[in-house]
Amino acid sequence: MLIYAKQPIYYLINNYPQKIKTLYLAKELDKKEYSRLMKMGFEIKRIPNEAAVKMSKNANHQGFLAEVEDYKLHDYQTFLNKDFVVVLAGLTDVGNIGAIVRSAYALGVDAIIVSGIKHLNIEPLLRTSTGALFDMPLAVENNIHNLLNDFKMSGFISYGADMGGVDIREAKIVKKRVLVLGNEGEGLTSRVSSKLDNIVSIKMAHDFDSLNVSVAGAILMDRMRYEQ
View (cartoon, rainbow, N blue to C red):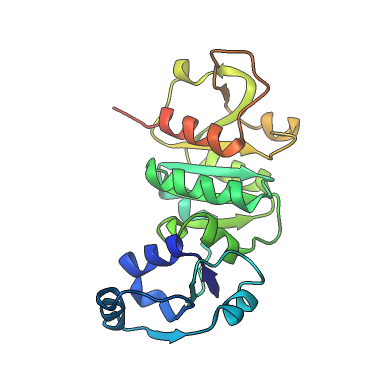
């Protein structure tokens, strides 16, 4: 699996160097940094920029590319013993999903489930999450109704994000909780909403259409931290 750009690659270098098979450098590093990297245990290859552009398919590689171990998806049922799970219902934008992964890791979410899609392209998700995906258990489950039923049967309370919901600041937050975020354009479907225990929203200071789903998700995740 190939990833590129300085930030996600340095996240792996500093946290999971064992997951890097080969580091490709299309730029010069100072001798001290190059010497440090040479001691990390992975292969380093210097390549011309033209080769880096071809490998990254004309994307902004910033001079850093790496062949890394494949990310292993989880079975969502292994999350039933967790406390705080985020479900993405039909999100398709990898940039949004990556931003949510970063926020979820920073804000104490235990796991994420991507639902409503059959396949998730992991390589760009690793880049947009700037490497945080390696610290965040992730599952893909097409049937959201089955997984919501499983969480309900396991004692979780579900919260769905919608502009017409109760102010999240007034909602009672329990320890075992699921936050469900709808897709970028439609939000939550009525069928999904009908299965949820609570519909919550972010009350804004000024009239505005809506927040980007990754921004709204980060605010909700922060406000749903559980305190006994």
